[in-house]
Image (tube, rainbow, N blue to C red; front, side):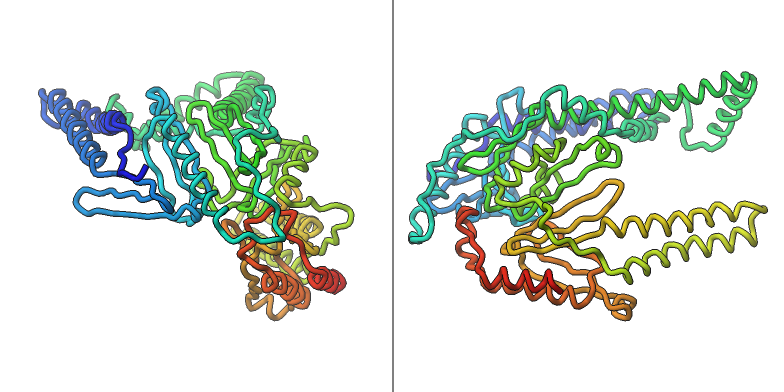
Length: 520
């Protein structure tokens, strides 16, 4: 297919529906306002129809002016009405082609096709919308062209033969309906109240009530307060408990609904293409992550779910995932389920052999003193200006902050071995990061004035698609870590990073450097 092609013609209809939807709110605002006097309904209808017609026309012209061409070595997309934009992306730069099907396009059998380049900053190409069959055909065609280019490259005698590409593979992780419900209960959310708050901003256009009038709310609270005061203490306590349970129930139901919509049918498979993740009830997404594009791992959890042994695994990749820098691959799993996925990605979880290093005690003491000093100042101010006894509140907070910082230090750790670097922090909901040394791009040692005086630093490791930092590392240890990582970077042939993980061996010299670091 070397001729310019257009997206599906029915995309114009979807654009028209979007234009009508955007025109509804202004039309309602005019209909319930004083604009136009007695004819305001007709004015609102005219404004809505005009906005919808203009939006439809713009979408049609934009559709006519957008074309895509699959060439021999690249894909080219041209768009724009008044000013034309043409962009060409070589197949070798395309990590993969993901498919997304939102609710309305799904009704018409359409999907959005996104060419992931890992450039970041919204630089990925996207075509909206193609038929589901055309989207899948286009994905397979781009993959084939990319694989053909890779096969045409000079062979390396040390690499294995290429594995024939296919879409089938072993299921590494799946969210059953029962587990999805359990997951949703832990995803407590009060977002519904934020939505109601947003709707209240437009309520004064529909009902005779000034939402922004403080006196209205004050009178309402006084009325409700007098009603509550007339009740007995037992009824008041029961009402308070019922209100609390009602709030919890709303939060749980909201969490379940959001989780089901986002993660229904969540499946992670491992094939020769890499990791394929499919999920979504209304909006269905299909993303493939090649193994060699996985830059690091993030294992996180929550305050409550940690107590029940639930964790989440994400891949740090060059391409972003739903406004996040990491791709969720096992959002709600036990560590025994996460371990096979980590191994399939070519990483290793820390174990008893991992030599952990805690942050510097000077760093711990400085953080403890800083936080306690803030509450100490509040204690003094409260003791001077506030009623007697209130100073005990910030004083108690100061004591609590000291205990929290001293305890949290036990969980702020880092480690390095011949192949990987590790960082862990948090004691109520710990987060752990793992990165491969050969995929790190840089090492930066950062010291603020106090850190320079006290002899510790923060080590920032350059990781494509994510961030990796080790806080409170002693200066000598930070320098040894930098030397070990830079030695790995300097000794890595980056032209071979796309090879299978088992072919990416580390030299004995690098292992020696790691041993020297661990002995520091």
